[in-house]
Amino acid sequence: MRENVCSFLNASCCFSILIIHEIVKIFSEDGMGKVVEIPADMTARDLCQLLVYKSHCVDDNSWALVEHHPLLGLERCLEDHELVVQVQASMNSDSRFLFRKNYAKYEFFRNPLTFFPEHMVAWCQETNGTIPPSQLLQNFLASSSCPEIQGYLYVKELGRKSWKKLYMFLRRSGLYCSTKGTSKEPRHLQLLADLEDSNIFTVITGKKQHSAPTEYAFCIKPNKGRAELKELRMLCAEDEQSRTCWMTAFRLFKYGIVLYQNYKIPQQRKTLLSHFSAPVRSVSENSLVAMDFSGRIGRVIDNPVEAQSAAMEEGHAWRVRHLPGFLNYFFEPFIHVAQLWFHGRITREESHRIIHQQGQVDGLFLLRVSQSNPKAFVLTLCHHQKIKHFQILPCEEDGQVFFSLDDGSTKFTDLIQLVEFYQLNRGVLPCKLRHPCTIVAL
Image (spheres, rainbow, N blue to C red):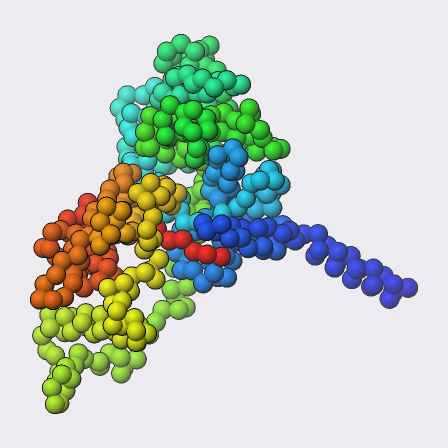
């Protein structure tokens, strides 16, 4: 009898293990997919870390899982704490998960004033003066305070193709429009969408598919069941900053302090690991000095400027030395092609799309081949949510080809050296190069 009971319990355990695992297919930017078996309680953050490990990526806490709906023209980044299996259950058959960089996921915690323009933030009960910058995010996170986002938005009328411009208010209780100008009186407010049972999406085909008045469309989609186009609350802002403000406030109102906890977890893990994995230099490493072996005998380089110059020359020589022999002679100027920030012969429009997808934070960049000059390259850089392009031209001096983006004032032997320089020095750029646009194949 005891053996039968044990057999039954073992069988039950095996059965329970089988039913708590789900199959999820993840796609990379190149369209290739990977099937992953995950437990039912796996969060988006945990799945991203698993994909980072399997794809041998750098885990810089900027990877995200994207819910993509191609037929509806919508996408959003899952919050780190969301359960992947639950989200998948509400997706349509044509929908998919994408694995992508998103540098702006928590950027509003670092630079809140950039995300929340003063004229768009108000209180439910009018007060004199403006919100101090130090209190801005605390007011959004605290359940006892009553901030709100206000401003004009275009709203697509349900069941119609026309858009109407209305004055809107976003509060913890939902999104409201005023039926009488900019009035906040309760009798003039109409509830358009509830935050609790909805998610906010970027509309990626706003003008083409939905006849949006601008490129800055977004929508509120109910997360119960597989929503159709007619059930979406389509909205459109005048500019990128306004759209970002509305969408960020929606996330803060819906999740509150959970978002801040998601933001702090990687930093807490990094601090914890630093106590156990801090590198300790040996005595021999501490006693290393710069040496010059160009003569018959070696000499110690005492001048720090000369030592730094020697280190840079050695670094460049190492890169060239480790190329295959035939590449070393013919393709030395093209050693950048293996870099994650180099995107080849993509168009200007495609570079804009990639920058938009990966977060539009200051210093987000990529390099591409120039369309107007096949011998030149273009640095595409994001600054203050605007995308700028800088042409990198080849120039010849004493028979050697250099690259420069400031008309030859600062020259570099290859694009890797150029990027490394502007990651440390702003130079003629509006900001340093901080975040490379990276596309990784799964």
